[in-house]
Amino acid sequence: MVSRVTTVAFQGVEAVDVDVQVHVAPGSPNFTIVGLADKAVGESRERIRAALTASGLALPARRITVNLAPADLPKEGSHYDLPIALCLMAAIGALPADALEGFVVLGELALDGTLSPVAGVLPAAIAANANGKGLICPKASGSEAAWADPDMAILAPLSLIAIANHFKGTQVLSRPIARRSEMDTSLPDLADVKGQETAKRALEICAAGGHNLLMIGPPGAGKSMLAQRLPSILPPLSPRELLEISMVASIAGTLADGKLSDRRPFRAPHHSASMAALVGGGLRARPGEVSMAHNGVLFLDELPEFNPTVLDSLRQPLETGDVVIARANHRVTYPARFQLVAAMNPCRCGHAGTPGFTCRRGDRCAADYQARLSGPLLDRIDLHIEVGAVSAADLQLPRSSETSAVVAERVAQARMRQTERFAALQLPHLRTNADAPSRVIEEIAEPDRSAAQLLRDAADMMRLSARAYHRVLKVARTLADLDGEDRVGRLHVAEALAYRPQTDRMATAA
Image (tube, rainbow, N blue to C red; front, side):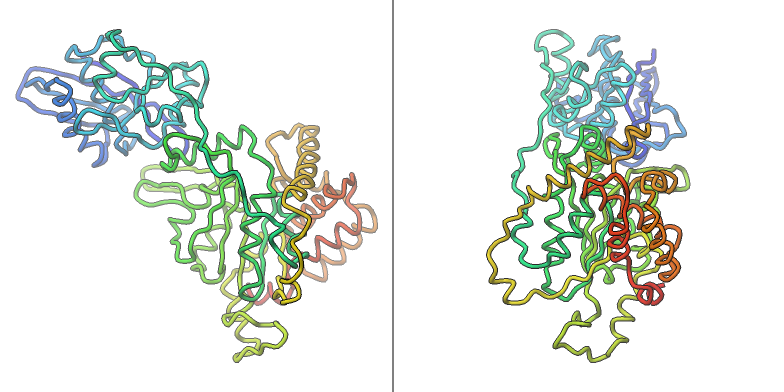
């Protein structure tokens, strides 16, 4: 007789059904797991043996074969412990034969029979609910699974004994409650920044249209301080966005106690980060910083200090909004639609172009330093601004009366106009002007006659690429949305062009 239970394998944020089959037959005592399992799955034999013994059960002195089907799909992780153990308990009569029908099971076993939390419970719960099934998972992950559907059957036991008692009816488990993480709601406020009015304006445009931003300035000018305040003016997460970032966090195993966070991600990796750390990869193809920043902000400080090859790996996710990690035996896709905010010094010594400072290497210092950034990467950044040093007179000014809440209100109104516009065009999947493809942006950001002439002349003079041309239109459309205008005018195009990098800098970087 063969006992069966359903579990999942993860391919990116997608959960694929895996059929766990256990066969107990006469023969020399043996415990074999087949089905392209990795080392963590193979080691589950010893965890299961100890957990069953601690729960008052013993493996029969027979030949036990566990098959994980489909056999050609790689199986990775420790979440196969619980489905194998429950399937084995059903095979030896410790659980009713039909008890596990209609459930997807995942969880890691401790040697004392208790269940430890595992990564990926939320995607597994969503996949199970889509197939009309319930979920059995560790108690520590129960609140995470509860977000999938309020009417979904979810069992979140503490141990193997609790599962057995539930199906016997002696101690029925209650459904876990969905919970949010209790984070400090306060965020750094824009009112703390003194001076830098141009940079604040660029930050507002960046938030309103979902654009990428590069700030260039000397040390201590406030670049990092400005970037840290971007989340305070971004609109709240929509339910769809909350679910998307939570699924990535669940796969990465960063959801503390199964609680979801409603705060937009803000990721700031160190410039020593490898390509696998930034875009994802490694032995098990885990999500990288760009995926952890999905629907949020990826802040790269000291941009030229990153490895140039690592930086160029951002070009594809910046364009498509996802990351594809290809391996010899499988292919994984993670979402990566983020806002890139980068900061850099103008040269190695940091003071090129600053009044009162003279670089010892002259213009060559700035040229060599900025040449570490490729032209194609710079072409994908919508707004380039110079952030000058703050004077002592600026620092002595009183705190600004325009707080993040005031700016966030203008940003929310601009975002609402974009949402309504895309909904009218039957494009509800688009959220910001930065997401719009070239065909759509040409339709919604068609400039008036004088603005079109200005854009044409500037494109020829600045030698804008086709991508840069459309990105100028996207920024101009955002500027018009902030002004409450239906049509893109000459002033909007002029300001958008002012944020493009200078031609000589782009030529040097390329």
